Every structure is written in C-alpha cells, then in structure tokens.
Image (cartoon, rainbow, N blue to C red; front, side, top):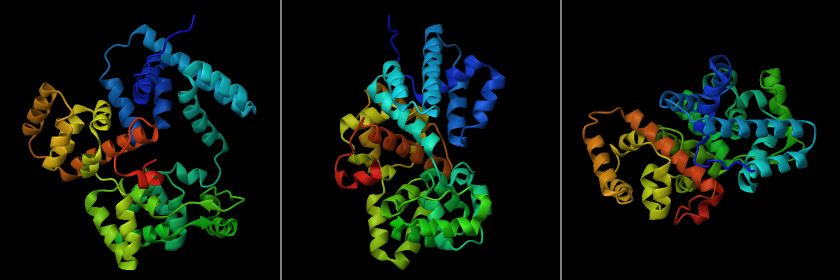
Length: 339
C-alpha cells in the first residue's frame, strides 16, 4: 500500500523534522553545511515545534532516504534509475525539481569554491582585482551571494562592477583561462569548453533585488552615470516590494500562505497605503484586523530590518513564480528575470 505524503510541509519544516529525528550531533553537522538564511529558517522551525507526529517523521525520513538513494544512483551513472525512484517516491513534478538540483550539485564545474564562500571571504580574495575580473566572478555567483559581495565593496567600485556585469553577454574559454591564471588555486576555477551566458541587465536586477533600497539607488546612479539606457533596463527588470500591487488576488493569496504574520507586519510597517490595501483585501476581516493591531503595537523599527523582510518576501514570491504557483500580472516581458 502506498503511503500518502503531506505535501504541505515546507523545505525548512522537513529539514527541521529531519534534524530533530537524527539528534543534536548529526544535526549540528547538517547546520554547518547550510547558509546563514537557511540555517536561521531551519532553526526557527525547530524552536517553534514542540512535537512532531510519528507519521510525519516517518514521511520525512522516507523522503530523505529516497533522495539519498537517487544521489547514489546518479553518482554511479544511473540517471534514469534515479529518475524512476524519485518519480515513484515524490511524483513527476517534485521529482523533476529534485533531480535537477542533484544533477547541478554533481556536475557543477567552475567557481566551485567561490560559490560556497561567505561574502566577506570573497571580498578578501577579490580585493585588488580589476573590476572586469570581479564582474566575471560575480556574474557566476548566486544572486544573494553576489549581493553580499556588492555590499562589502565601496559603492563606486560596486557600481562599476555591476555596470560591467550588465554589459556582459557571453564569455569565452580564453577569458576564463585568463581569470584562472590570475587568481590561481584560490578559487578552484575550472574552465568552460564553450561560451557561457552570464551577465546582462537581468543578472544585475537579480542582484539588486537582494540589496537594501538605499544602496540600490546609489548603485543605479553609478550605472546611470556610465550608461543611462542600461540603468533604465535594469530598473525595469527589478521587482520591488511596492510592486506587490501588480499581483492579482489569487497570486497575492498564494503568497500570503507562505509569509509569516510577524514578517508581514514588519514589512508593512513602512509600506505604502496601496500595498497595505492590496495585502489586507486578500485576508479575512479577522486576520486583517489582527495584522493592523500588530503593526500598530510594534513600535519603532529599524529601517534595515524592514528592508530585510521586504527582500525575504520578494524572494518567496520569486520562488513561487519559478515553481509556476503564481503569475505576476503585467510582467510577461520580464520572464527571463522573474523565473
């Protein structure tokens, strides 16, 4: 008999259940492998969970076992077998997502060590390098990691680097070879055998969506000083917290299901009336009233804390859009960036 799976569990919740089931020693090693944001999310789930039903623990452990088996099959070259296992265990859609993630982890080449480094370490490694070299490295990083690197840099230098990323299109193996020769073994950089798409205005927009709004404006001003048209393209591709008004009611309701009420209250503390109205009109009267009260009694809050909640909510929105669970109305032309 096939065991039914609770598909409502988030990734953070599953990770928390797994950690609780495996014990503190193993869980500590798992936490060390996570980034700061993921570590905080999983820790928050653990702290807020008093007890987990045995069937939920069983489900999570079975899913973990299935994924581990799939990784082993891929490592042995059995990609089709791994696909079959995951499809039977998780269903076709979830299996495809997990399989793509596993394949990326196994086959990933180039910038391996840098992609795992904290922003402050990246900054130390790249300090003194030519802006074009930094731009090439930054264009290969995760958007959040790249944003951390940008925040560690002087704003004028950071703006220059983003300008170069925005102008970047395809990179040849020869260019990567020059970067490898310059940085040496510090980066564990492997060469691509063909042209790779890396930069462009959309790549810069992704990075800026993870930077505080005050810094974002400064960086765009620097880019505009070099190329006004490029700055305009980047700005048009960005999605800000105020753009939540672009969501239709169905999309807004889907987003709100994945946003913590305290985070939402913090985010709306400094939001426009348009955004507040959009959010609260998609909640029950009782929930909206509770949210208003929470905002009212919150008291003064730091600007950086509000901006951080804005970025986390936009990140949640982007993940839901990427998964095909909602559509952002009026931004069809920006699919390359949103997805």
